[in-house]
Length: 271
Image 1: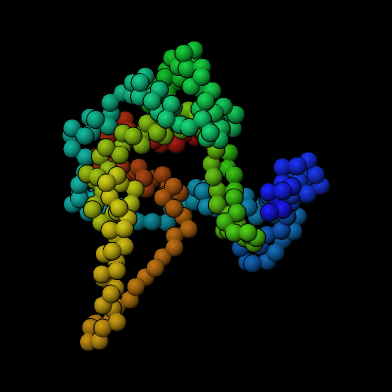
Image 2 (image 1 turned 45 degrees about the vertical axis):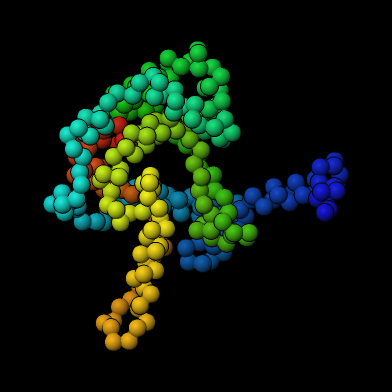
C-alpha cells in the first residue's frame, strides 16, 4: 500500500527506493571457489571474470572421440536433406527473421534494436541482406557484429557466489538474425535425427512424456524381491551452449551435414 500511495510521487520515499534498487545491482563482496569471502568491487569483479572464463572459455578437451559407427546406427541426413540445408537464404528469409524479433528486445553492444532495422528497412534492407548472405558464403563475421554484452542477474535475493547468478547475452540484431535463420532451417530435420527418447527442444514433443516414463520406471523400485538398483539425478552446470566446438563439428559431420554448413557455424579467430 505504501508503494501504491507514494511510489510515483517525487518524494524522499521514491528516491530511497530507487537508491535501494541501484545498490542491489552492485557486487561488492562474493565467495570464491574455496568459499572464502572477498570484498571490493575489483576483487569481486575478478572472481566473476574468472568464473565465466572457465565456464565459457576454451578449455583443453579431455574427452574421447565420438564413434562414427555408433552414430551411424541412428538416423542421419538423407541426400535430399543435405541439399535442403545448403539452399541459399533469400532476401525474404532475412527480412522475415529480422521482423520476427520484437521491438522491445534489448539491443546489443551497437545500440540498435530491431525496431530501427524495421523502420529503415526500405533504405538499409539490401545492404543487410547482402551482408548476411556474404557471411553464409565465406563463413566469417566482423568482430563488431559477433561481439555480445554479458549481463548477470541474481537467481536469489542475496547471492553469495558466482553460481548464484545467471548470464544473459545481449547480441547485435544481425547476429540474432543469422542465429534465427540457422535455427529455422535446422529445425526442419531435428525430428528426423534426434531419437524419440529426447522429449525437449523438438517441435511436437513434450518433456512431460519423459517425466511419465520416469514415474513408471521408479514406481516399483521399493518392491521386495527385485535386483538392487539406484536412481541418479544430475544437475549439469554447463549447458548445451557451452560444448566444445570440436565436439559439435564432429557430431555434425557424422550426421552428414555438408562442409558448407559447418563453415557457417564455426567460430572465427578474433570473431
